Picture 1 (cartoon, rainbow, N blue to C red):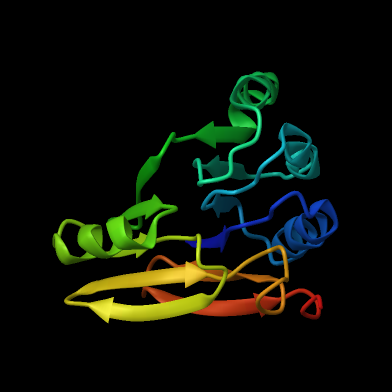
Picture 2: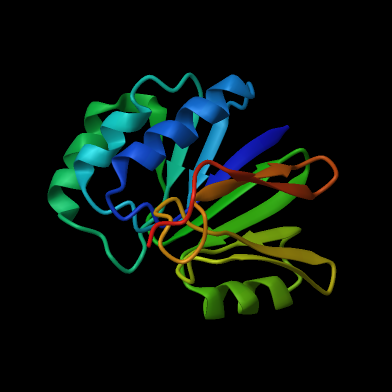
Length: 168
């Protein structure tokens, strides 16, 4: 199974809209967002998504109460994982958290096949022992061109999808 992994939208609804449409075009049925979505209105951009949108907190979380109300109104479309998400897909254990330092510790633990993180706004991939540690960059487009990653859970290969130019 392939999943789309994105992070650090920071209320850039236009780029999130483009990213979700690209994910739909690719036929991918799961998106993991690694935090800093910010405002609850950002979830309107995933309302038409035909898969599941997994979400965690970042370090910029906007209004927690309105975010929780919006998540509840979307039913099973949005799966909220709090500060740390864990999934098992294709027999691969996956963890996702916003903080890169905690992510590195999780990768070193040996408990996961993949650990994903956000926060730095920069694409990053490395192997930590037998664990793939990876950051999909940013949807915002401030530090690098906006984009996201596609993780093939079967073979643990990742691909970067760029959706627009870097903003100045």
